[in-house]
Image (tube, rainbow over all chains, first blue to last red):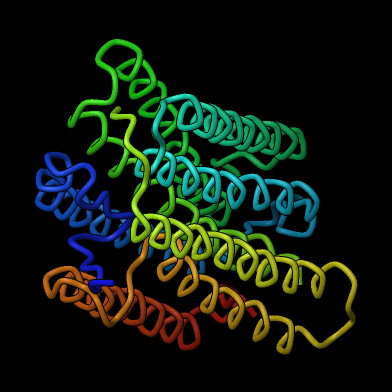
Length: 207
Length: 116
């Protein structure tokens, strides 16, 4: 068996998809550059959050606002969706028909949308306890960080919907395949950012 | 898609990649359940809990990079590795510098803003 060479981060399509595999090298590298710049944005929002932790201004703090159960559910949803997207990538690479790929993608989309819904529900409960962005520096920093991540997940869900539409119209052509590769990187990346959020924001705050 | 069957090599490649995702998922589950369980049920001191949470998070980030994003030190193309290492450098300078300067300022000027 010859040694596999990874041309880019994420699952490599390999020789079975020669055209898409050749096209993906520069496309995925470019997307990876964007992902790393996004990582810096998130890291600075994390730094801002830690700096603002003391700035409650007499408003509600982590113990009043955060629920460990819903943070745990959201974590499980996102982790499961990362795994199902991995399964979708494998179906794309090795599958003979589209059926299994579509199944995994729809499951991933459902998990992603449930995550966003649960997060909005959380924000709603927080707002009822006076936990709104304008209440204190701590809450402004919290919403800047966590809802930026939520917006990213929403964007990724929209992108996934678009790709499902493209599969329906064009079938699995090179553009769709490279699109799925890049969305996969975004999806796994968002799960990595969420590790930081549940560790620093939710668990760190509830200790 | 063509109807051709997978060759032996493709089959073994497929099973090793599948194994990678499953191992990653199991490790990530363990590294998620541990800190949640500690915060929910244990009565360890806060410093111990924060240390466990931080350690699990760091390991889990590495697990995700390795098993989900297939980024490892060995087989990478040089540019990818350079990009990741450079981003980490920028990140450490900016985040570390921010925390150092602002928390130092709090200590000297407004101790009430310190998060501990």
